[in-house]
Length: 61
Image (cartoon, rainbow, N blue to C red; front, side, top):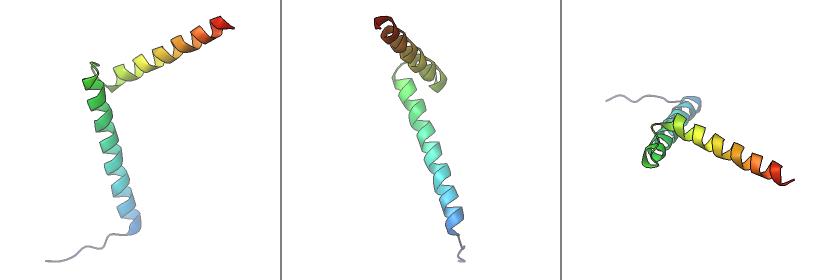
C-alpha cells in the first residue's frame, strides 16, 4: 500500500473545511431544536431581537 504526502497547507485547508462544515451543521441543529425552519429564520429572529433591544434602549434616553 502506498503513502501520500500531505503538505501542511493542504492539511490546514482540509481541517478548516471540516471545521466549517461542523459549525454549519451545529447551527442547523440548534435552529431545528429551537423550533426554527432553518438557520436563516434563526438569524432573522436574533436580528429582530437585537433591533428591539436597541429601540428600547433608545427610548429610555
